[in-house]
Length: 212
Image (cartoon, rainbow, N blue to C red; front, side):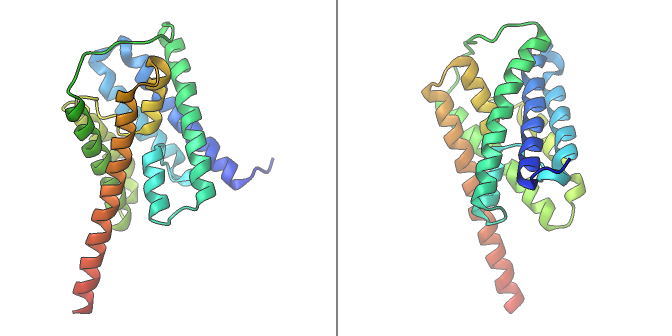
């Protein structure tokens, strides 16, 4: 059966995000291994989807590659729709696996500025890892590096290093579309833009050295 290539990529993105978000939601009943479970799941999903869609599994990552002109607008929109749909499906599947019902969860109060900065930082470093490994011909270790970063960053950021608008979207479906979550999404896209600026500056410096 032949399938449109862009649709094929979208399905891969949706499935990858769905299983990743499922791990986040289902692992809530076993907090001891939660961060390990979600980081491991993300690593495996990137490995499985990398040769199909590039293994973005993250609207901020897709936005970065669009801004860098590595993907076109139709691909970006397809990926975003697929990623958000995957996040929504993962929310419900995760709760089904854990035997819980999807309902609002009131978390502990955290510093709004601290949460915002943490998401900018976690997202920026996440994308920097991907692009630097890709441009230095070390693509094979990207899934493991990303998984390790998510595991590490989740231990010292107030938000658990969501660093992914699709994950935040799933949490908004659970808890409601409030201003706090919208600010986290903004922070994640700012992180992507900061990485883009850094890469542009870095590349321009390299070109200057080559000319000399």
